[in-house]
Image (cartoon, rainbow, N blue to C red; front, side, top):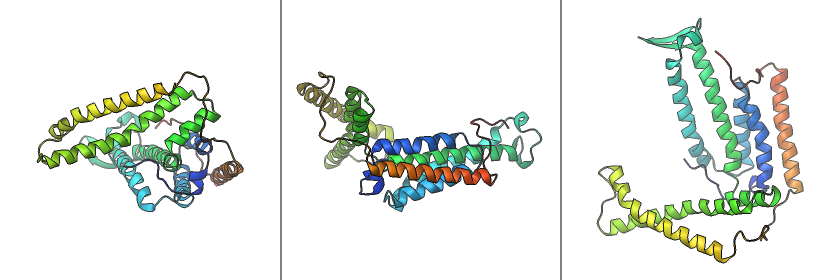
Length: 270
């Protein structure tokens, strides 16, 4: 499952990273406090259309990201009702019964609502994760929200180790194949153990070089630093924020007036 940044040119990619964070946070909080099926489903559909259309994310990439959480929550919805205590669903209709295992309708509906809400939150988070470079997000945090740049740029350096280690892992595997060491068969643990020591030595060497490079540039000595790329809220950011919040508000009002909006509580007893 690839929930990483997808590089392309779109409206969402051109927005300030903090604008996208501000746009999605109230919606995430609202969906987390809903207790019905319609609201999480509607917001999941809305945000999926926005990501696909305004974010220019390919449908195949979006499906690769979304299908695994869907399977996990579907499995959770089907299995968990078997383990609900009977006193919590007393008087509920019984859908299925396998000996001591009883499938209650109330338990199924309750768990399905929780799973749908969690899945909607994951889809809502794709609005930010698929269209935002983590480096741009950290730079915007440091410049606009005064996040300590020592922590921010240290975190950025750590994130950049991930693709580097993936590339080094491929080189190690290729080197083993050239030497006639099979990369298939046997236990997975035994194969990974062959890669652990060279990969660890490479990671330590790269970390030491990174630390020396940061220290040679007097990183962290001064309370402020200069930036080659400045971040600020533009008119486009404000317009998108207003339009997105307005669309979400109209959607909430529709469910409210139609009577489909349930009580906004986070936990609901059976």
